[in-house]
Image 1 (cartoon, rainbow, N blue to C red):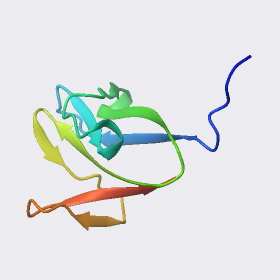
Image 2 (image 1 turned 90 degrees about the vertical axis):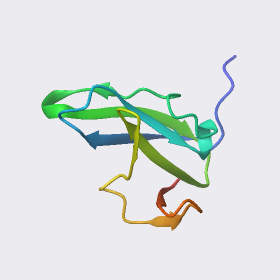
Image 3 (image 1 turned 180 degrees about the vertical axis):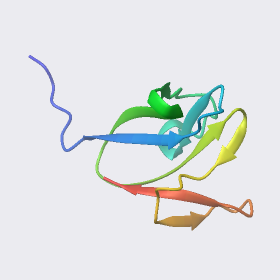
Length: 91
């Protein structure tokens, strides 16, 4: 019998980066590992991945060819203590 993931939801993360060679997703849901979650390159240089998350608020950023970047589609951000901001996603 399969165990259900109580309340977990699939969230899509995507970034338009047509000239990128590699785009990763890093956040507090994966210990901020900068190369922990590779996004798949789709049409028109849009990179995408889906992550299953439990209810809560998570911080994240993209890593494009080794450079940390914000999600331009994210309206809610919080200071990260490094002089920049992290994006927030609510599940």
